[in-house]
Length: 289
Image (cartoon, rainbow, N blue to C red; front, side, top):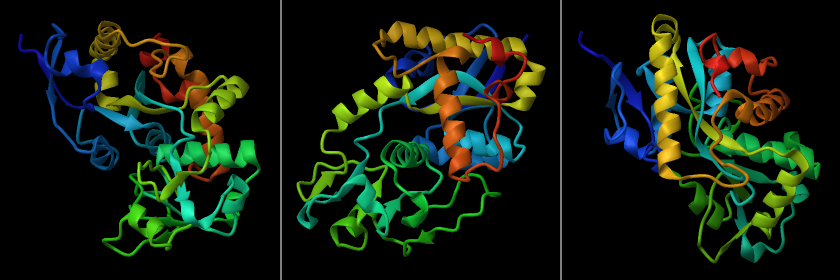
């Protein structure tokens, strides 16, 4: 019998290299990969058109998609995880800028619904007392989920977020890094801030997981289980481990970051109501660890 062929999008991460190059494969299915650069360019067609069977996806995009009834099921397989404190910049020549100083300022972000942006806003609001409603947000892209109404100011077409910061059209930006000496990180010691944040919360800020269509999950649960196992073996073969593990696999390993991000998304009105972590999965994926 001919094997199932699945349309798939995964970024070029070290822990999925063996899956993408065929060194690790399944007897049940083959993966036909489509490349997107950057990978997040695949998220919009996935949530709007179900363009793939398997797709890497930002956590916030998935939470918003589920909140609006999109038939997608989560796999607890982290593709990207990182501490976020280094992803905020301001102009060095304007003098020191502390998190609370962002109130009343123009802050740029690629899209208001990016996962890095949601993590950073959650950190600013809950750990540094910043009133997010007092910031004038300037964005550059539409949300992936069409149902979300974006009320932020849109930057003029063709404008570059870093150049706008350097030109003084923005006071700070989130979700960006730069080695330009004219720019300075909002947190003077991002690594130290991240360490202290992890000690307080015990959460790894996961950015991207993997989703499959509801139809695949319902019709081929054995395929979904094996897909997860394939990804898990890819991570093990890559020898990626550490404390904390920035690429958690399994429902329980991802429960804390998912719960905290759900809280942040409700707080920031990215989703209209709270979602239980267990409801992000189905009968097959809920038991994956």
